Length: 135
Image (cartoon, rainbow, N blue to C red; front, side, top):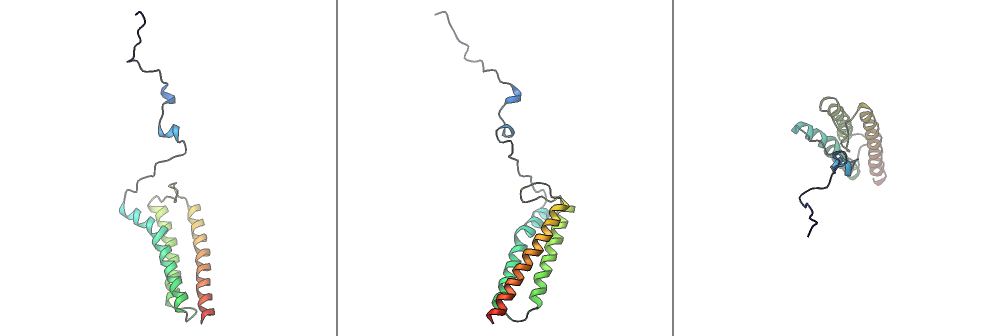
């Protein structure tokens, strides 16, 4: 019975090749924590609540018909301006992030402002045009 094995020894591992989330999933990033309630609310505002409000106002414009320009139109375009201002504040004062959790830049803000304006104009024109044709 001459051969014995030491079963308590662990195999040699190189610490540079140790398994970790960064080595297994090199592109995966942990989502940063939002540290303030105001930061969370601001992000919810420009990502969800503001867009929902624009959609609801456009739907109301379509269903109500009527005048081409009314207080509802002022509220719609005021919401667009407010969303652009909120996104600016999010980036400049609250270290805003993109939807993919990357640090947002003023280039992101510019694209957001142009994109929101174009999409809002198309939505507004469709709602007003359909209301006009429906009356």
